[in-house]
Image 1 (cartoon, rainbow, N blue to C red):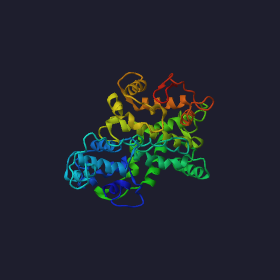
Image 2: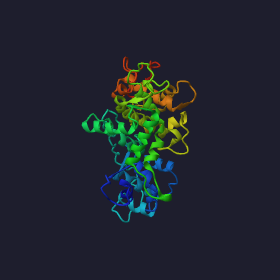
Image 3: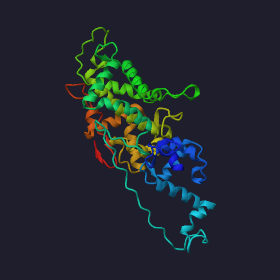
Image 4: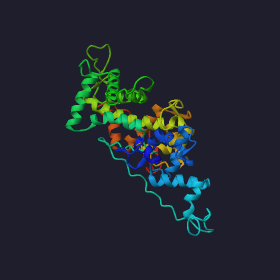
Length: 386
């Protein structure tokens, strides 16, 4: 019953239940199972404790908790605490037949070896090849909700083309064929609010769309600048402006790239925000910078965001070396600009599908050619200089 209350985010059993609990479902629902009578579910006082407990239940780090894991964890906690329920649950482990035996296991008896769950399968790529996973080491629910609004505009399909036509018309209200950053931010907030409208009234009112707009706002200028750089700038001042050039706006043929870059930079920022402040989301602990201690505590939680720079880090020593690469000025902190540049540089140098997209604004004869700052080293499974 406790499992079902959390699975699917509902109070009962419905179509949302998929017989597994993801981290965001646990974070939303753990308070609702505190009085089910089990020690393992009691006394969780804050989100940090809740995250730590999820990690203990999900012992293979797959990012989901199945019913077997759930029951085993609760049972082991009762047995270890020698509660009355634990004594009953442990009767099957006692010597002799059940019922009258003690709670101690037979001397010298070894428990059967614990079967290891296979690692989670790779995330499925989206329409342009970004593989963002779910769960403890993947992206947050905020990211997936945000990305779901702009994914349809990235598809190379007639429907994708139609939605881009509508989207650009919305972003270009004066019809001059050019969109400023302010106009594109207005497009983003309208799109988010349309899919996630205001709900409730008074103190119970929620504005999911506006909350997502605010949460991912640091991404917009990065997506805008990269997309605006795609078309060749002829250096001429745009008619009707004092000094604006082509690279100061996003035009219609750059609009698809803008939507793609929104999603890519949102994933980069989601990973950054998961580490900043040591939490799974955005809260008062976030200060828009990652310190080394935060990185060492959180690097395992961003390995499935779809970026080669964050994959295959297998030890704290490797994590320290990666931090030093990102913090190239040795200031002891990593800012969002450094973070995004390091990830982008790694993708470009590794010639991934995402790297090719991120480098489209740098291609000779199309956009401006920007020289990369030198070889970076992606450690771990990649194991190669890039």
